[in-house]
Length: 208
Image (cartoon, rainbow, N blue to C red; front, side):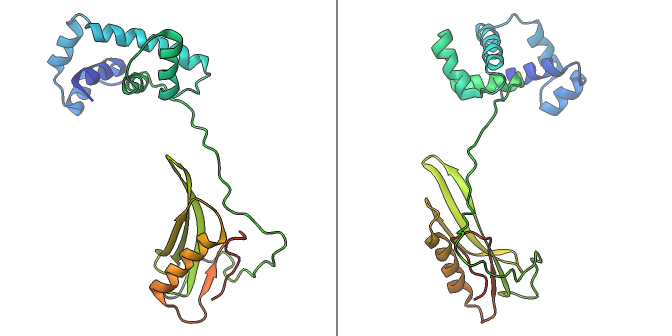
C-alpha cells in the first residue's frame, strides 16, 4: 500500500480512530497526513474519485454481487473507462465493496446403490492405539486454472499424517486405489488394519 493509499485510509477512518494513533500504526507521520489534506487533489485522485462513483453504481446495479473483474469489464464496456484491474480492486477495497463468489459445489461421494455396504468398524471413533491400526480415506476437490482436480488422501488416525495420496482430473476408482497403494508401499502394515472411508463407490472397503 502506497503512502497515498495510507492517507486515504486514515481519512476514511478518522471518525473511528484517532489520527495520531493510525499514523503511528501505519508508519506515517501526522504532519505528512495533514500536508496531504491541504494539498489540492492530483489528477489521479480526481480520476479515482470519478471511477469510484461509477464503481458504486455498477456494484449497486448488480445487487452487490459483482467483484473487481466484472466491475472492471463493465467500466470499459458500458462507461468507456479503461484502467487496470488492480486499480479497480484497490478502489473497491478502499470503498469496502466486495463481490459474491458462487463456486459450483462438487459432489465427491458417489454411492453405488447396488453395492453391498461394508460394516462401520469405527463407529465415529477416529482414534487409534498405535500406527497402522486405523487409516481414514477421503476425497476433496481443488479449483485450478484448468478446472477442478480431485485429491484422494489416506491418513493414519494415530499420527494424523498423510500416508498416501493421489490427484487426478476424474473421480474413478483408480483415484483412491492409487492413494491406497502409496500408503501400503510407504507403511507395509500388518494384517488387521482398518481402512475407513465413506460410502462412495470409489472406495467401498474397510479392512485390509
